[in-house]
Length: 392
Image (tube, rainbow, N blue to C red; front, side):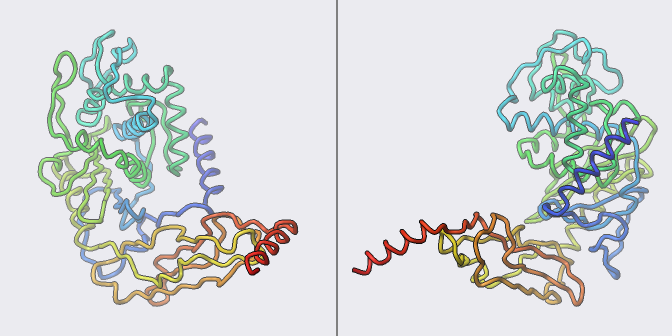
């Protein structure tokens, strides 16, 4: 019942915001970038997806909306919420946390924290990112909300905001199989987590020792040892024996997240991650088409308090394309010469479209940067007087 409520809530938020946000491309089998004739992508996993994060473009996928127990991937949301508290200045990496009885009572993967033990937020993050430690995960959650139930509610709210419409959390660790997500949703979450750049040193660490007992933690994402440009993220075997990996890397202007669920073995799990990353970097590139600079000149306002208003592109003119296909793309643009007040910030005054034959591969609006207020009679009168005085 709770799961249905959360799914409905997430769907409602998604629909309400659909017209005002940059909607991501479909990451399933029919992804607009999974073009015929492309080099073969070898993945043993039954469910996978590839996302270019700087443009929020899904490049390829299969079964990416299939639901599965989130397991340790649940911790990616816990880390996201902790990092957001740090960014807000309400928490610091150097803050000391006193371990609670509940954190001490956690089973499964752990660093054997004792009740009353004091440990820094930084050490706890290290234990979660590298070692998937459940006790450290609970200790972190309790630094954000005293009640774990409140923290779980926060997790589901954030998932809805990120449009993870097939994800539901019931705990902060992933211990329960009732934590549900998809490869698609995990890619969205991973992309959000990677915005916290200071996490890179944690997410890419191979081995370390944490806590008073100096418990050893070893990263199951073996690509952190060898892959060029690796930036994270998390690999594991779920309690039901399913191999799961979420890996990310950056090369040049491209930043890629790959998620694979159900690889044939832990070795193949790493191979799937590497194959997906290699595929993304070898087959795709960032393309920034040029447009006439005059399109972004200030626009004239008729009957406005101001004579003109600045304009900008609603989203950056930046897209991912198959390597070598830029000559096949055409860029067209339109823009009003003037608009009549009143107008609101964000109102459309033009558009830029990129096409490949008859297929639109990218589009964005040209919008007002500020409100354009209609001039009043009194202001128009004084404006006329000032102009006449200036001519005398």
